[in-house]
Amino acid sequence: MTTLIINIKELLQIRDISIDKVSGNDMKLLPTIKNAFVLIEDDVIIDFGEMQDLPKTQTDKQIDATGKMVLPSWCDSHTHIVYAGNREQEFVDRINGLSYEEIANRGGGILNSAKTLQETSENDLYNQSIPRVKEVMKLGTGAIEIKSGYGLTTEAELKMLRVAKRIEKEFPILVKTTFLGAHALPLAYKNRKDDYLDLVINDMLPKVAQEQLADYIDVFCEKGYFSLEDTEHILKAGKTYNLIPKIHVNQFNAFGGVALGVKHKALSVDHLEELNQEDITALQDSNTIPVALPSCSYFLSIPYTPARQLIDAGLPLALATDYNPGSTPSGNMNFVVSTACIKMKMTPEEAINAATINGAYAMGLSNECGSITKGKKANLIITKEITSYGFLPYAFGNNHIDSIILSGKVLT
Ligand code: NIG
Ligand code: FE
Image 1: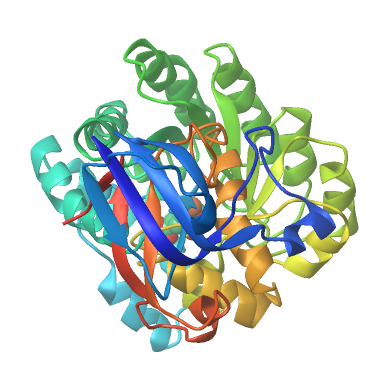
Image 2: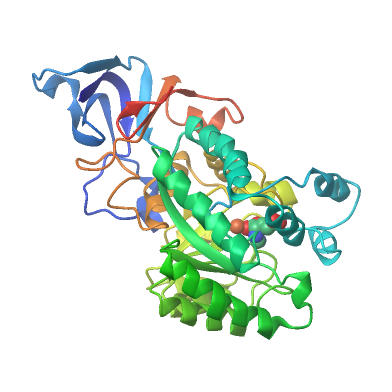
């Protein structure tokens, strides 16, 4: 089945396959073609170019994109989209003056979500998660990373990852999964952290590996959660099962998590709302990509990741949602891109690079998605008629998507 998109006002993010991410000043450049076409065969982009060079081929389906832009689908490299229930009450508690930390210390927060999830069947968890998956697909996400971490028992962690794997099988969206057993210390292990680490390392991890449920390993490296020492312990254990680290660091405190991630060849270090010069130095000359989660900063009213400092230091940066019930109940990458421009002073070019090719890199998918490249997956966003691509982040909060193509098919 061949699909041809013609008369595209501007085709964004055209790249050679050799580009796996963009860094520093290169993030300011977004290669485009005006008055373009894209040719798709089954689920793969097989050709693109200027309309004047359109080859004469028979196609099964033709889409006229006059006045519209086409870009690669968003690559959301950090989510906790599989969860049970919600935490609206904590949201109200925060409005009324409690802090995120105070709520967590009362047994709310992650432990609250874990309790609900443990009481939810695998099928029910799947049924609660799929509307969110469908929602983000409609919002233009074509590749997503999904973490465990709201289970905190072996059974519940496996349940979360099985649901994530089922999503991978059943939806036309690329999925990578991450084991986050060390997300919070369960109440049953209060004052017995070593016993919980033992459970994560010697019970959960072997089972996750045996069932091949995860590509990556994550730890919430933060004061009151897991220390540098705990994190190192878990990352080393993960390595014995070939799980590459992608870790939560520097959300509230900067104390060396970034350097630790780099030392263990983390694919990404995520959050970085707090950042110092040592963190930046650690990232330079590494293959570890920093990931910013502006919707989390927005929702919790915490600082935004200093994108300018990172990019101006020559580093790459990816943007992701962090979709989860506690700190970011939103999976909208369009909002992320807008907020990155508005609050983090990223240019539209930088934000689009960060949400496409760099997001793909942050989940090890640079060869498959994140740019308009021959041979990559045909996961595309077709915008409504807009004046320029800068309009996407500029007119924030509005939906500028006309239609979505996932795995070569128009999403209905
Ligand atoms: O990335 N920071 C740790 N984990 C999640 C949120 C946890 C929660 O509040 O449920 C995050 O923000
Ligand atoms: Fe997160």
